[in-house]
Amino acid sequence: MEKKDNNNKNLSLKKLLWILIVLLLFGGFPILLNVLLQIKNPISQISIIGDSKDWLSFWSVYIGSIGSIIMAVVAFVTLKQNKSLTDQNEILIAQNKEQLDELKRQWEEEHRPRINLSIIVYRKAFHIKIKNIGKGNATDIKLSFNKDFIENLLMEEYKEIYKDVEKNPFVIEEGEAKYVFIGFCDDIQNQWNNKHVVLKIYGTYCTKYHIDETFYMEEFITQRFMDVKDALWEIADGLSCPNSKHYPIQQSLDIIAKKGN
Image 1 (spheres, one colour):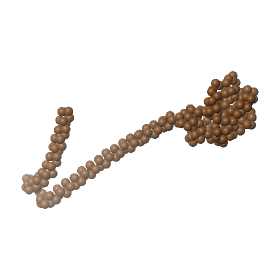
Image 2 (cartoon, helix red, strand yellow):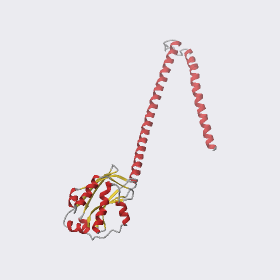
Image 3 (cartoon, one colour):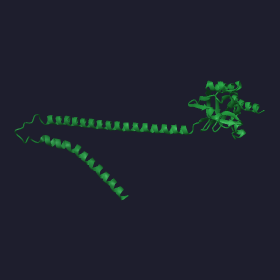
C-alpha cells in the first residue's frame, strides 16, 4: 500500500514539474526574446539586417511556422496510431465473429434433427426404418426412391405405397421412427434371390438437410430371417398416423395384418 502511495506521489511530482517547465517556457520566452533583441552586435565584422521590429516579426512567424509543423507531425502520428488501432479492432471483431459463427454452427449441429435410414425385419417382413436420432423434430421430410427398386416390388399395392410417400412430406418427432413396408421375407427371397436389387433413397428435411442412402438388398435376403423383437406398441406408434398424408405408412401394417390372416 505504501509503495502504491509513493508511486502516486512520484507521478504527481512529475506532472507538476512538466507544468512548471511549460509555464517557464511560455512565460520566459518573451522576456528572453526582448533581451536578445536589445543586445548590441558583439561582432563588428557581421552586420545585422533589419531592426528590432523586423526581427520580432521574423521570430513570430518563424516560431508560428515551427508550431504549425509540430502540430502537423503530432496530428499525423495520432492519425497513424488511430488507424493502427482501428485495424487491430477490425481484426479482433472479425476473429470474434468467426468464433461466434463457429459456436453457433456447433450448437446447431449438436441440436439438429438427424434422419437415420435402415432396413429391418419385423414379423418376417422387410421394412425401411426412418428414425430421427437427433434433437428436435425433423420437419418437411421429402423422400424419393429409384424407379428400378419400385419396379421390382412384388405387388402393385406395394408400389403405390412408395408413390404416395414421395408425394406427401411428413414429420418425425425427436426419437421417433416411421416404417415403410418392402415385402415379406419369403416372397422377396424367392423373387430377388438371383437379382441385383438396389434401393436408393434421396430426400431432404427441414428444408436444408439432405438424405442420400443406398442399400443392396442381396446383403439382407441372403441372411437367415428372424423376427425383430421390437415392441408392437413401438411399431404401431411409429406407423399410426391419422393424417392422410401418412396413409402409405399405416397401410404397411394393414398389409402385414392381411397376410397374417
